[in-house]
Amino acid sequence: MIKVIAKSFPKEGKVENILELSKELVKETLKENGCIKYEMYQDIKDPNVLIMIEEWETIEDLNSHMASEHFKRIVPKIGEYREKDSEISVCKKLI
Image (cartoon, rainbow, N blue to C red; front, side, top):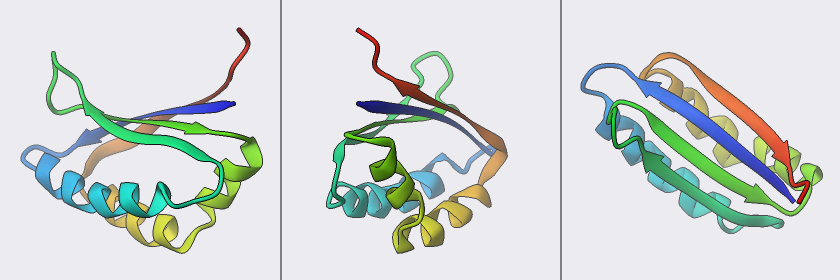
C-alpha cells in the first residue's frame, strides 16, 4: 500500500477556490483503479493549510493517477491559488 500526504498552502482568501477545484479532483480520482482513499482535510490549528491524504494499492496506480487527464488539468489550476509549492510525502506501509 502507498500513502500520499500532500500539504497545500493557499494564498490568503483562496481556500474556497482550492476546495472547489478539489471536489472534481476527488470525484474523478475515486473512480481510478487502485485508489483506496482520496480525502482532503484542513488543519485545525491553521485553517490555511489543506492536506490531501491518499491511499493507493501500488505505486503504479499512483503514477497512473498523476498521468490522468483530470490530474493534469486540475492540479495546475489549484497551483494558481497556492502561496507556495505543496509539501508531498509518498510513503510505503511497513507495519
